[in-house]
Amino acid sequence: MNRYRVNPGDRIDLREWDPSDRSLFDGNKAAGKAYLRGLRDRLAELQQVLWAEDKHKVLVVFQAMDTGGKDGTIRNVFSGVNPQGIDVYAFKAPTAEELSHDYLWRIHDHTPAAGSLAVFNRSHYEDVLIVRVLNLVPEERWSRRYEHINAFEKMLADEGTIIMKFYLHISAEEQAERLQARLDDPTKNWKFNTDDLDHRQLWPDYMRAYEAMLSKTSSEHAPWYIVPSNRKWYRNIVVAKTIVDTLESLAMSYPDPEEDLAGITIPPVPTTQ
Image (cartoon, rainbow, N blue to C red; front, side):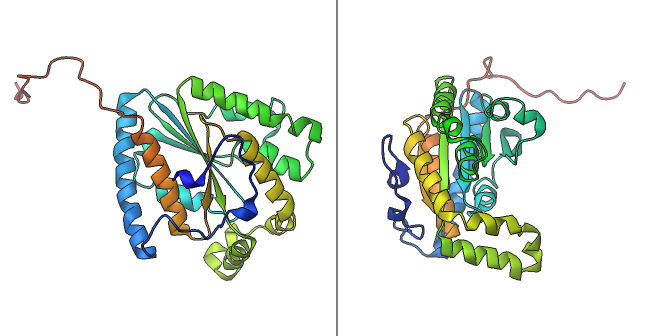
């Protein structure tokens, strides 16, 4: 999956990244879904060891344009894990209380504890994306936030958090098809928001904001992955395989029992006196 990893210092031009790429998997969609099932099973095993070992903290961040597939990726990749060991947070527009604090205040409260996995559906990166594109704060303020975010993630990593960040890359044409599908299918009408059309008109501005985000905030301890996402099944494979490979690299193991279990037998339940 390193093909999709943004190395520190890379200058990203998203026009050079094919959102329809599927070069790392030779099979078709059906084979891809079968392969994903195996990855999900392995992820469930690794998450169980993560929970039992109670040592590492894992943070997975998703960013994308509207219809980019954040919800679908989370649903498909993490469907087999133990819900006790995972928390998913969807960061919406900040509340009045959140706005009264610094912009990272609401984020830090949801970072993972030891043994757990946290998934961010949108994240602190909204403060260099939508905030930038819609001019919600002056450039003098949002331009400083790349440095803030890098320092924040470095602190998390230094304290034992494993960070993976995924930008789900779709084309403008694919977005148009997905928005139209939300209009055409009555069961998807609830997902359609006319604000999405306003943001679509700002596509070039968003691409520049994403390119700056990817170029300025990918690091060894908190890498970005640009995931080709026009094909949903391939997108899911790339994300799942990256997470599985990362967790396997931790060489986790189940902890030893607190005492010698040899010779222990389970006694029968006492009969009623």
